[in-house]
Amino acid sequence: MTTETSSSSATTEQAQDVALFEVHKKIQVRAVSGIFATWRWALVWFTQLLFYGLCWLPWNGRQAVLLDLVERKFYIFGLVFWPQDVIFLAGLLIISAYSLFLFTAVGGRLWCGYACPQTVYTEIFLWIEQKIEGDRNARMKLDAAPMSARKFMIRGSRYAAWVAVALWTGFTFVGYFTPIKTLSSELMTLSFGPWETFWILFYGAFTYAFAGHLREQVCKYMCPYARFQGVMFDPDTLTITYDEERGEPRGTRKKGADYKTQGKGDCVDCGICVQVCPTGIDIRQGLQYECIGCAACIDACDQVMEKMAYPKGLIRYSTEHAIAQHWGWKDIAGHIVRPRVVIYTVILVAITAAWFWGLANKPVLRVDVIRDRATLAREVENGLIENLYRLQVMNVSESAERYSMSVTGLPGIRLAGETEIEVPAASNKSILVQVRVPPESGKQGSNVVFFDVKSTRNDKIAVHEKATFLIPR
Amino acid sequence: MQRLLWVLWPSFIVAGVAEGLFFTVVNPQELYLFGEPVHFSTLATLSIGFLAFWAICAGSSLFTCFLQKTPGEINGRGCGQPPASPAAR
Picture 1: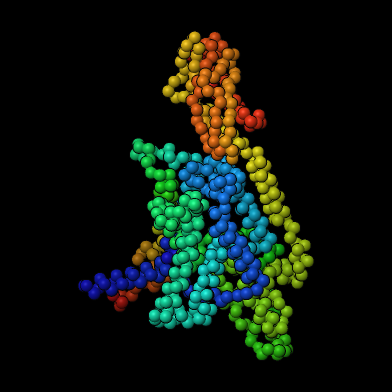
Picture 2: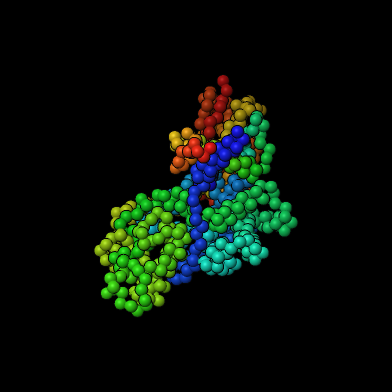
């Protein structure tokens, strides 16, 4: 009875194993050098100098780029974005999306191959792996070797280096939300707040898992863009292409042998294009969704072609049409302008122009008029009728500003008390104002009045806001 | 592993979007929890908000995953698993 139970539960476990875990073979990527690898490294440097460095840049006595969630204000150089400006964020996202569409339609997965954080951090983590553990063969040997003191040391130092990069990345990330100066002084005394600690560790762990372990699986199974990028492709889109006509039938041969008389193509079937592929595909089987367009196989194949003294470009950036019709670069370039590209460009230019226009005309002063909820209207000295309002004056500019307030709309209407207000840079102030009118100046019930808030320095910075004034029966 | 990713990953993305939208229109310091104004720091409110969104979205993903099970899996066999032969018992 006992044996039966245990064996049946073992079967269930086995069944679960099959259902829950996909068969994943670890990919050990062979390092590659060449023009496209250089381009990728250039972009790694560019994006990461930007990411790790920008948060340290001061601007007007504050951090140049700070997404202050606590104060609900985003500072980006001279600009301050408030929650009311969310339209600009939406606009920015739309612009990014259309740029991506446009680049993809013209050049394939340029984003994935060179600039995507997943690619960039994988590249950094791979570099560490290579420096510590050696090249592909050495790593595969180490993988296969039983655990020993040496293996433990090597693996341990690799993981330690990864953790260090991941933690620094997490720290930098949080530095865009909490001023990095505060954060670094907290680092000195190790006195981060609980949530700061959480997010540093969280983002660090994300970086570690994605760049260290998940790698190509992120592109293959998690990335939504990888799934739909195909719809932006057409036969004139540049993709990493294997020239089948030239390469096949592939086969090994002696260097300098007259392979053409043997009926062989240019592909020497060395398999290096597969070894360097970060997603582990064989580009010779044609365009696949796993291909992130990193061009590592181009670099690798070109080196082999050079060694064999064959012309380069057996694997190259080309288009479906170009391969079929033997086009050169001139013909490919001549087919860049096509309806899809034109439509993407027109939309992109229009939205970008509108975005910048909106930014240039972003009001630097905002005023909200809220009627005081407690008192509708009351009679004060000399029989005047008084209404109370709360003015929320938001100075969205980068300098402190003094504003004058006035009210119009009814004969004899005036403000009692303060008529000027000073608001510090990038902040808001709310002020309670009393508005008084003689009772005979308006009709009973609600009357329309207008508040005018004007900068005392610049007449153009002004807001005209409508409100209602109640005169009791 | 893949199923875990199917649950946690889309919910993470959607939670990020939900967090952004929600706290753009709602000031975290003007929230009420069980009739009391929330007394956490803004960072804590935002963080808890995100984790809560994530948990809720993960619940939805989990449900989808659950409903996606094939009849074969519900009948007690893993997908692609041959029926257990009586001899194995």
